Length: 461
Ligand code: FAD
Image 1 (spheres, helix red, strand yellow):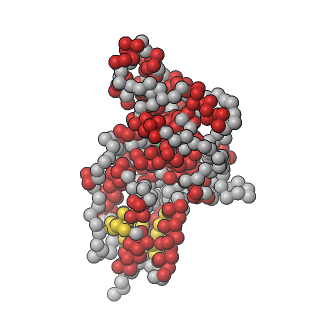
Image 2 (image 1 turned 120 degrees about the vertical axis):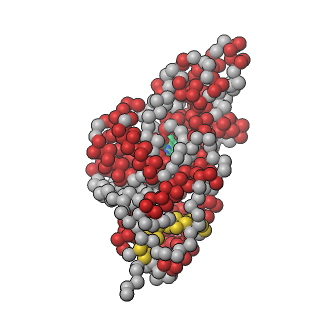
């Protein structure tokens, strides 16, 4: 009689059965597989474990467990230090190999290294797989003489020309060794402090959402993606963050669909890869200026609180900040505007804003969040680092009749049309009835202060 061999598939930012090279390799390398998720106490102490993402994660793990059970397996859940827990599981089932997705943050890179060493000390091997978290692995395309692209356009040209790996089918069966202990799969209902309207997570939900979006709104995405009220972007960002959807699969499917909308969507997925390849090469950019500029940021607690609560007196900024508080998600145009308002008009350190976003965003992601913040603040990869977004100009272009503002600011719900963007211009009697603050700062005064600090004169968009 022969004994069955086992391997471990350690799930991290790849909580899916479809197109998962980690799971596929684990299945191919042994008779039985331990699909393992570790509730990582390191992530908790680093401050990345926040209620909105914990709720979404709970959905993802329940759905993954259900999918594994349909295939004869189940998810094994442990809690603690990743290296310690993985070594314990590998030793319990005699696994020689542990499979893991390559990831880019400093934390993920240190986790991988610790795991490799801990497993090697036990005579076991860590196998790291590329193109699981991103479509193209960081470093797959580089400019000559440099380890990463600092500018998106040339990156995108090379990204578009690079071949992607093929899509892998979900396994039909998964055999899990018997007798392994597991914690119960966490449930969303156990999580407290969650924003009122956080989207549902899980691979089934993500796949259904993508199919529906691809069959409809994707067609108009190129023209409509900045329309705040229409709200027709894919909202797939949390699924991409947790890996319930595979970026490789989305690119292949969008390319098969074709058209301007699909092309524009693929371009956004390339932006995601772009920021990941920057962070992989410069992990410190999560906390330090990518292009150090010696800013002497202002720090006024009352102004920061007003920005966080959506009480700056600029309705478009406030609407977007309220959307974040309510949904744990914000439209990209809102993210650009609110980040510009904080880092330029108020001239507050981008790290303050990035932290607030990470505390709430369901898709909160070190690469995408920190590097987008740096992009907007002008310390990152924007080729026009001194542009200042003007909330009124942005309102005219992206919420012309004020529908988005009225949706999120109930106190302005009765102000008609575009006048909702400038409540300070309403007749005194009407203005006095509104429980809505006066603008925190004059727009030109704020923009001028920023530009003067940069030694420039300029214009805001
Ligand atoms: P869609 O427009 O449908 O785009 C499809 C996918 O492309 C997104 O799901 C996302 O994965 C990717 N994508 C789109 N735009 C960008 C971009 N600018 N950079 C990187 N990837 C992009 N995105 C996050 O996923 N996590 C974050 O923490 C995050 N923080 C941000 C902070 C700021 C200040 C800014 C300006 C942007 C941030 N973004 C972040 C990028 C972007 O705003 C969101 O990915 C997008 O709004 C998500 O909505 P969607 O899924 O409907 O996007």
